[in-house]
Image (spheres, rainbow, N blue to C red):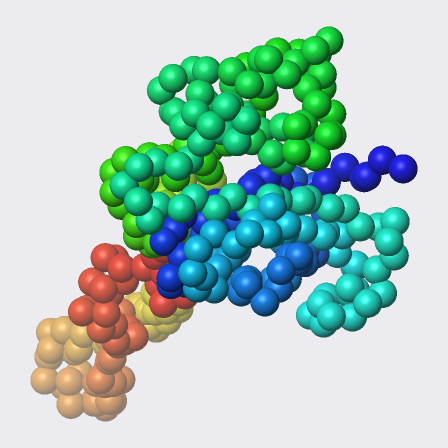
Length: 374
């Protein structure tokens, strides 16, 4: 029964470069290439020789995880080196809580599992001569000579391009080590063993693999930090863009605030105009009442004046009489005295509400208290 399509992208090989008298660390990167979160579990045929951290976990869609694989100290390349293999099991993560990964692997069904197999290659650097070579022709692999480029067969074994060309028959290569078949359209289409090429380059540069791993880890940390900074900068740019929209004079937010300001001060003007009209109306009423009172007073005074003028004419006639007539004439009251007159004048006490001029100035230069700038 053919295996299910893998949920993860996994390198086909792990390379450990000697000398092996100390712990040697290499890395494998697992990438979720499915459309669901994936649980993974790393196993090996020689568990006493390796330490894997982490050996299990969960990857969200598109995420990657770097797995640290540490080879315990050895005197030399183990005689059973070809038996050193790794297996990465994976399954779609259940929709329930997956914090307990142990229970996930206990309850998963066999038909829900997918597998990725990795072979282990030991590169012994104890002598100065390179022994990274093709096991068929014993020629050293090379990153610059085409015929000596290491090519990976579907079974995971690597041979040089020259040997692969010789073994290819009818678009099929039969692995000389495990007898598994690899279908190819051309030898050049076989994937290169970049792990081996990297080991060759490291040896040429005389840089210990552990140092290279540390450098790559540092670069990975720097990349993560920079990507985080880029994300923050992008969010800040978007935030400034949103804020800038509110400052456009033909924009909706600016117009709404402008309309609110106009409405606020219009209501103040309406209130002041109403108070002004009310005060002027009261002034008109008082003036009309005074006009009526003074008209009545003038009419009354005019009658008194008429009576007084008649008395004056009568007194003048009396003064023209002879002594006998004047003696026989009885003198009467000379007339009615005019009382003290107080005409109604527009003596209105104008009282206005006190206004804090500084507060009024502030109102004309600032927003009302219920307004604030963004």
